[in-house]
Amino acid sequence: MGTVIGSFIGGLLAIGAAVLIYKRIKGTQGQGSAAPSAAGTAPVTETPDPAHELAMLMRSLVQLNILVRTTHGLSVEIIQLVERVIDLLENTTPQMMDRHPSESLTYELKRIAGAHLPQIVKEFIDLSEESRKHHDAAFTTAIGDIRDQIQRANDIVEHNEVAEFKVMASFLKTKYSSGEL
Image 1 (spheres, one colour):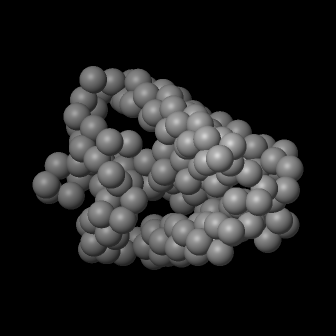
Image 2 (tube, helix red, strand yellow; image 1 turned 180 degrees about the vertical axis):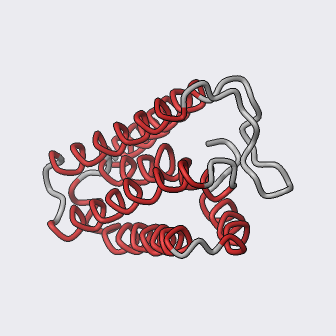
């Protein structure tokens, strides 16, 4: 019973943390719309300083890395898997923001870096060590899937496959966006 209550409270804390991260990121984007337009480009916002937005995303990823490294009971494999995803995001997101700032793929990568990845990791970390053991495989699969999608986005950026931007963005939006985050 205590584990269920603890898991529930941990889930609530994770949701709260995700909302705070989202509000912080959204706050830097101005008052513009938060949803991509139907044309496949990111919403037009009053972002005064893309460098500031990037710095906030990178700081969020560093904090996530520290959280993973300092959480007792995580396996070396899980730590390394999450760190690989963080490294990919730290490499791909700035490139996309620099080269293709208005593309929806850029928007979706920023949402994964700033909200989705921290939320899924935090929810896993908030579980008791015993519960983590039971959810280890599902978490590993979910993070591995995110890593694969970000790697594909990275390949698209490196090879400048502009036609793939909209397809990949649509896939990421459908897979990782709930409409609320």
